[in-house]
Length: 484
Image 1 (cartoon, rainbow, N blue to C red):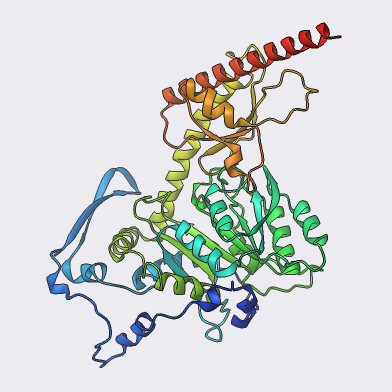
Image 2: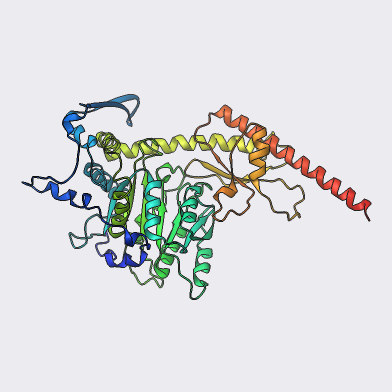
């Protein structure tokens, strides 16, 4: 827990200016808005059209799960009928209360944040948690709640491809903030904000994936994060911290703290004035990478005023996340406890570290300076310290002085595919569709023999393209000489 008892939360009214035009028009559900009153002792509720539980055919549920303390052992978890009932019925829009409580405790423990409502208790910081159908569901609703058509939004570039359609659907102007192996280039962000055109709307949000970024694999450093937080305070924007790979960190150094953690422990006033008002980070987590992608359980953590709008969207769209998958998730987590959950995540991260090492070894052998690359290095990359992706660029031009613009799309979708290997061309991660020579490769699923074969096929592809280009240049030179 952070020891700063002076931490204060921004007031709920602060977020009024951050709401989108459509979010201001969303209406509260006349039924779900009254759900909490049903829990009042002595109340006889005629409120909701809930189906009678006695008509449900399910009487209990049992499943087995790995024991984090013993890789050869499994635990059977049984949910009896009385405890299964909440998972078969409609539940609160924000999430199953038991799961909400567990996740809230996790955020307190992992990120060192104190939980509570404004005005209640010491060190209250004005945040809470909402459950969603995966973090993608919550991100979409957050963007819709905060961004109006025509608004500028700050997005790291390259960026997770899944958010590009969101911003395009809202007809936003995506302002690209370049990244490198150390995260968002904060000096570039500062320059953009300092030189923002007068009279134009300023951005209200910055979207970033700070650990094991999809696609680049980068993990933002502590120094970069501190600078971004200072800029968020000075230029008044909210950081959308999309963090699906937080628990997949396998770097040799201590994992840098999250933005959500940092904003409560680091003063980030522009002049170092000690200001510690919190509430400029809206964080997104998911169990997809560490428990099951099919459970579709994610959670947003941040200012209550913003989560209220996300929940309002949910209440008017899909009502809630599946009660049953929430209940299954809760009983698994409860049986483990926080210590065993974190032990499990460390084992998962170690699994991906080994996968990373296998992939990079093959990459170096076939496209780097290994024994199979007599032609010299055919690709360049930075090894990730989190996540499941490599981001590399092929060296296709033999002439280092050439200036023609490279693009990996044809190389991957045509030549590589013809040779039996497929990856993602980097242009799909460019917010505004720019050309790029980079390629994203995932190493999460392949066995070592398949990785080796994939790298051999990529090497074959690069050499074929280089040869074809060399022949084309030679032919063009001959034609040019003959015409003189």
